Image (cartoon, rainbow, N blue to C red; front, side, top):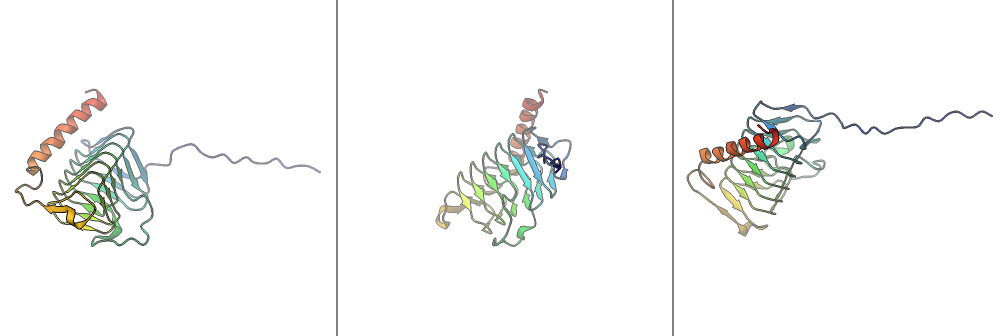
Length: 198
């Protein structure tokens, strides 16, 4: 009786191919940032993707507007399939981050959209399909529920509706759009110098 040689299956240790990604010459992506998925990722001019941040387009495309900042260890995109989630007006078509948005360290963003010049602070979590208006501030460690809608110029500092306030100041929260743009551009130049040595 002869024995047939067995074929050993080997698992590949190579990384999966990167998602289709659109950038500009002024987009900064740190070499340790992790871009994964099958849907497109579009990064606007002067967008900054910092070290160890994760952009996951496995379930929906991701668009990040010009001058936006994704800080270290932040996560953008759906972490699980969008089944049974109460989606807001724009639905589960994509994750869209507006112009000049700052996503701070370890924040998780699965929102349908975040309006221009909004700040999402450290370890905040924004659920699937949520819509965050322009010039908002989501404070540290706050959770926004899936499908929730937050109006423009709103500060969310707790977990209940009583812990929100609307700021109706000219230029939105924290000053004018031009002032925020100058801060983001200055940060971009600093990071570029630190990452490239130039």
